[in-house]
Amino acid sequence: MLASELIGEDWLNEHDDIDISGIAYDSRNVGEGNIFVCIKGYETDGHKFAKMAEENGAALIVAQDKIDVNVPVWYVENSRVAIAQIASRYYGNPSERFRLIGVTGTNGKTTITYLIKSIIETAGMRIGVIGTNQNIIGDKVLVTQSTTPTTPNALELQQLFAEMVQGEAECVVMEVSSHALELERVYGCRFDVGVFTNLTRDHLDFHGTMENYLNAKAKLFNISDKGVVNFDDDGGKKIVADSDCDILTVGLGDGCDLKAKDIKISSRGADFKVDYDGKTYPVHIVIPGKFSVYNAICAMGAAIQLGVDMDTIIRGLENASGVVGRVEVVPTDTDYTVIIDYAHTPDGLENIISTVNEFAEGRVITLFGCGGDRDNTKRAIMGEIAGRLSDFSIITSDNPRTENPEAIVEQIEEGMKRTDGDYITIVDRREAIGYALDNAKKGDVIILAGKGQETYQIIGKEKHDFDERIVVYQHLNK
Image: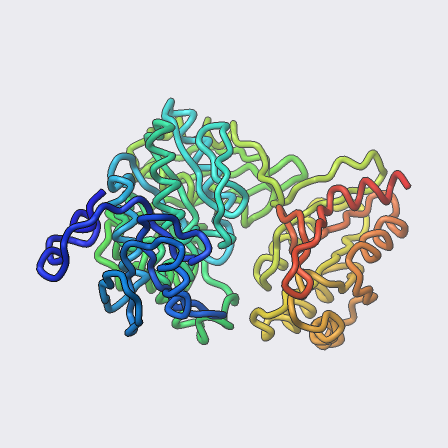
């Protein structure tokens, strides 16, 4: 493809046209004839590696700051925007060739994408999913090189979109993180439907304030034709007030376009009724918890905005199985229950413990930690929540990263001490899981919170194999 096709006709005012063989933002991945885009990151700056990119064969470099190289340079105001535009053009603007649904919010994104997938498939359409757990088209898992946990970087995202087109996806549903919106990863995408789940404390290490965090989430509705918003959430109310998007409001309170009521929670899942457009419908989902009802009605709202009929939507929810790492019951062949859940925020932890409290016959034992190099203000808050709601808590490591894990545990413990909750601290997570299993009694429910679908633990800057399912099996069969 020609440089002028990727950058625009203005390229020809300053340079001769040249053939471009690919795009890279990591100088180590540059091939002969590639465009190299200098991205300013948090740990390093791509401008420092422009010379290396040239040596590796870059034919053209896109930059924000002045660089000294012997190949043509195209200067831009924002290289993150530039790589999103260039990648979209290079792959033929793939997101214009299917219906695109984006889900944002602190909690529930992954589950909602899978509920939407089940509904769309029940409607007879082929759908792709992009998100935290995996990227898939139908049952095919796509292997990507993305280093971002939720929404891929702009280049990888456009590559995935192109694969979705090749896989004949008619719809794509994706998780859209606040980082992605703030860092222009979805720049140039137009969403058919944007969904907002809720806003609770998280990522303040990046956004600084809750207001900034909400403003980042709200950007999704500036690039969506239609929206679905949890109107019970204060952040949701602000999005509705400030957005020109065609929004369908959902919730449990009055004033919602789609309202859930008569909720009954059990270990089998959740049963409830939905009022919509003057009619009432019974709904069942296999994932228990009040928060699961919120996830379900957000998914219902997205399907309604896409034009799916209510009977198909309800069947789609009934067809949906559980999601890995979300209220996931580990088969243990014991007289107690082990549940793995991704809860890593105060709201998420409160939701899972409250849900388990509704059906646990014995004690609720909560094992959790907090990630290092992330918002440390939530640590004591999570300690207090676990101490208040659990019968017994085990404070341990999550992904300590470059922080001292003992120091993280101590910060969590500050909140625990504000309660009367019984607890123990065991910094080694494997040892902590073993302790929980050894001391569980008949009817108890052990919640392993924080890791969810992750099969690793980040200590320092290295990932170590750590799949909690395997850890449980190994301990029980040692």
